Image (cartoon, rainbow, N blue to C red; front, top):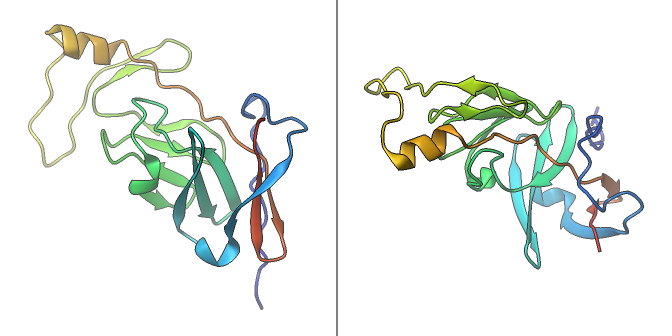
Length: 161
């Protein structure tokens, strides 16, 4: 039995601006996004991350909500995507942070998270220079989602005009 892919529901309040009522555009063939994979698609200056999670297809900006690294070159584990830059992990099903980036910083509500180090790395000190202090004041944003639909063998996304 084959399970037909569906679109992941957009978490409340996290739809990308301008997508309500926006026209859907073909972005990829369904065959280009097998289960458990991610794909980057670009429209003008908009880079989208398409992810085929166990709960459905998701479309967000292909930018880490921390420092904008392309998530499409990160790692997808179930519904969680890991940033290739600072090891932050983000939940595509709910839009929240699962593991804060190693640099620390501010969460969407302004709470501070200290820097941390992976188990195989030396400990990171608290920020002391201007660059490190800037990282500590960088806010991790919530994802913005684009409506997705599957039409036959095609993935379509509502893109703002």
